[in-house]
Image (cartoon, rainbow, N blue to C red; front, side, top):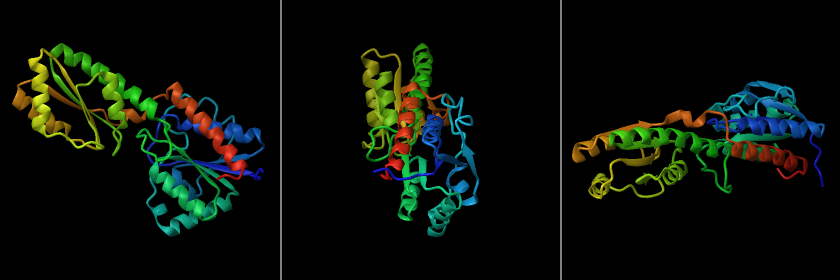
Length: 285
């Protein structure tokens, strides 16, 4: 049995992820085709509390599917952590006539969405984070692009590392999850990967493995480290000091959050956006 929805709100919250724009576009196009108005909430929960809300149409979301970032902008909102902020958020939804809300973001964004749902706002969360660390979903918007972006940089670093017979220690993003590091390590043929989910080997054990590889004729070495493990600068200094192998540490940083989303991220985001509208219309928020 369908649930009558007249206005859907959509916001992006927390860290941005490639593919968020594709999800926004999908929500707008599918909802508009059903005669449902869509309100875009700028700057995440901050915009909801301040009333920074604009109507979105198929025209306003044209030519964004290929763009990284989010046209709605995003921010973390400390005020929304408080019960008073959550109550105001629910009230602002009613002020703008929003009877269904789509929240695109990571675990913190989902916690906020749950609070609004508990206050009577029909809410759907779309997992949008490069970290792939959301429970109960196999995929998050932005992960594929982040891995491909990181791989592009890793391949280039490996080229020069091979030329100079260096050891390269590269830190990738992921917060407390090691998925980007693990996927990149496998795809790049790295000698070692350090992730938060597995106990970190001692510096001595890492150095021993590098020396073992050297004795077998290996001329260059690649270690991928998740940011939840960190310490790449210190490790690089120690490896070079003990082994005599020229060692470089590289932190890839926020370039992994930017860039045009891959086809995989565009497709997943588009399907998720359409499904969110379906669920709201079916009263399954």
